[in-house]
Length: 335
Image (cartoon, rainbow, N blue to C red; front, side, top):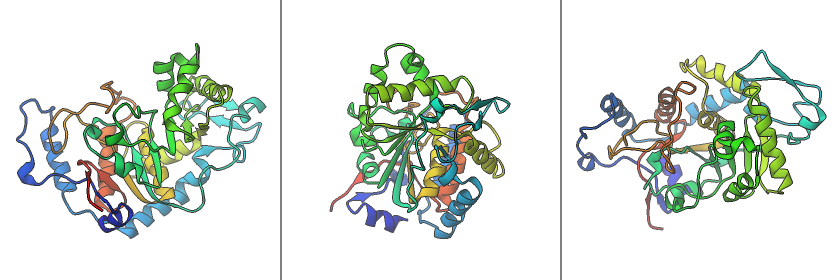
């Protein structure tokens, strides 16, 4: 894939680890168990990366045929008519009947084109992006996916870019940052300005508690005439995708939004690049402390998602040439 990256990003050098001579000594305050883990990552990541077209096509084909993300990942008026019963992803004994009012919040049809995008960037929010200079590479992708309403602008442009075609919004963020949208909603809508006219995917059907706040988000976007295009994840897709990866060794926890978006990208994109996926507290090459997010250090709960297990899956796919995982800094080059 290195030669493809050079063609697609003619003036950019892909991210890569530093030479062994430039790797600093191990710090005394390294996180517990991190040395063995980082050594393993370095060993697997240091090998020259090349896209393995057969491996990519095989996994992409399996995802399309078994998980059907193209047709099922997003709830639409076409696949979920009035009167349907939606089964919640976590509280799977609870259902929600689709009323005309709820139906009106669904997009009309599948938002994804049948033709694959050439290059897609899926951008996680790890502090590994701090000072990475990856913004230009991210923005050069044909389609850019960002997770969980990340902070854009504010001096982060050089490292994370600004282009956004799709952004996800977990209900927990709507609760923590915007008080469940029970008060003034203008601050929420104004916070979406940095994403332009992108699609925004919400998860109202994880459990019964998430439905009201996600519906309020859609109503707020409508009321304030935001150009954002809101849509909903389909909980059936979550369950199918969860079973798919359980059968391949990911046996703990719920799939994170980031991993879900990687799977969607693998169905819809010929070349998938990942940035900002690093769940550990030390940088794999520079060994300095890494914040949980590039824009804050709020800790996530690994009782819900097992991020190290998910990262191992991503590193495996990188090693198999299915996708390109960027862990080092990006280096702008010359035309």
